[in-house]
Length: 418
Image (tube, rainbow, N blue to C red; front, side, top):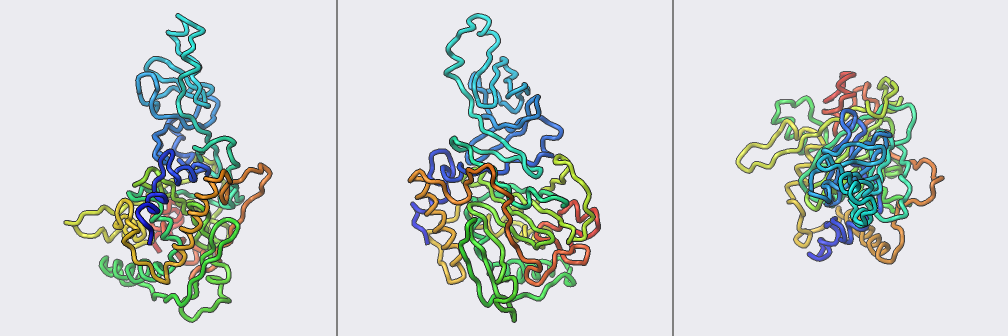
């Protein structure tokens, strides 16, 4: 249980808040490259700030404040320049650092006008990696964008899922430190849902958790489990899979691994990204993909309508089941009223790491996974080959994971929804 004050400290992400200051030390995905394939600007809200993602005339990406500081017109309508954007209202131009570099009429009247040195617009760097665009909202010096394995793998197929979830980021992250919910939410409840849909042939034999464990490692926490008649020699315990500090999880299987990234839009809304790769071991035909051709799909979010019936058709998969569990806790769950049990020891450990990181930042130190060395190599993260006894060879009949129902690649090869 957390006090109200502790809960505020861990959940609020706006500028100047303790958690907002911590999270601003990290690069966060803000869009897929494909989302700017047909346009040059894109509205983004990140960590409580309204911004515009843009591509300038030289093909460089940037983030800029959403409104021109002159008269407040939206910079979503900004005109791309060689470096930055120009507001179309009166032609004020800002470069990719946010500097005010030109105001046509006033410059004609007074080329030395000192106003240009005083006016700025918020501006942040953007980097592309693996078909995703990442933004950094923190102070200088800018850290290295980490080369986590799935973003830099060769000879794989990629796809990206996205949802906007109407709740705080922390209750989503804490779900990743709770292995036991898989037994109930994704097995017993799933069987109930597919029964409601008249699809009894899709029911599964639930596996019971006998033991769960958590180990801190250099990049976060490895979560482990023993189910049914398995032992600690089996890979669900011996390998497990990692929660990467501060806000994503690597899951799936070694053949079809996935990053599940939870990016706070603001205190009560979270951008959820599923970044999946299909390796040759998945038996999916591997063909080259340009960054802007990586498929992007939307994962539906259950609507909370107390007077209506549950949306069974989007609750038959892990993503729908997880989302309804998170959003029904409220926009920001009140952890001062929770009742934790032994199965919540991973949640307690994760909260401890967050508090330690907040203390580090207050001392002026870098927290876990803020990298400064530009020569850092690929960061590999181990996962199970056959998670919970299920292989990742999707053409062999097993599902690729919790968004398989919506996967463009699996629909193309005819295995979605298995």
